[in-house]
Image (cartoon, rainbow, N blue to C red):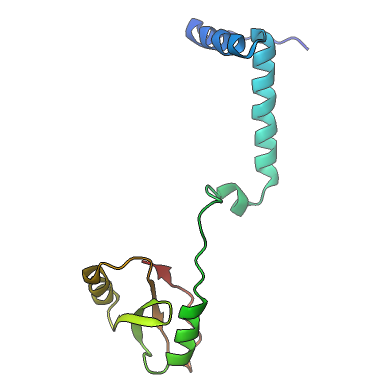
Length: 131
């Protein structure tokens, strides 16, 4: 199939420079670029919506098993409070998340686990984050 399109002189110059840097003609370079673009789009459509939204795969995943262990063991003592944990250590707690966050900031600590603790007769709060 032959396709003729009109492009600006600037774009044509850029295509020519890129094609020359790869040692191929303009027509061949444009064909390769179009194929790569179309193949990429097809692959993106095949991915699940979650996969297509992933922008980083090299971000380290933190293990919060120690924090979860602490929560399980101390749930009733800190029911209806916010807690900031570093491993099995309680760093700050209180009934107001902002107050707990201020305490943590004053200490200058990073990478803490902050969550709300529900009483044991309540279902677990499905949240939490890393500070």
